[in-house]
Length: 81
Image (cartoon, rainbow, N blue to C red; front, side, top):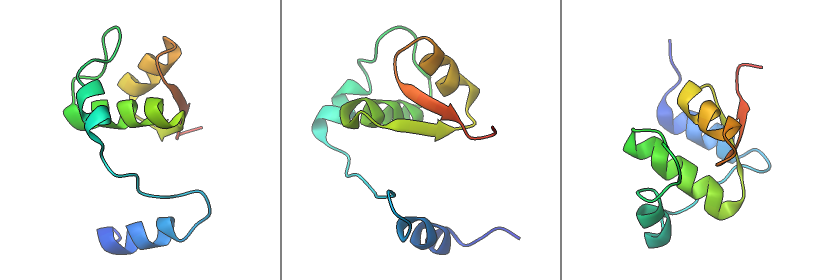
């Protein structure tokens, strides 16, 4: 059985280093101006643009984001390793 999304968010947001970052106009615009060939999914593009704005690392199992990171466009760690 999957955990309720609210419970999942509350659990992770109670841990050090986790926070929700509001979507800014700059990130929304930049998500459509990413270099090279970024992810086609709009939400993943917002995640990438947010990470670039915050100089943050994306922890993901998404192979397209990991490939984009391998090309040097965003920092990412494979969540499966």
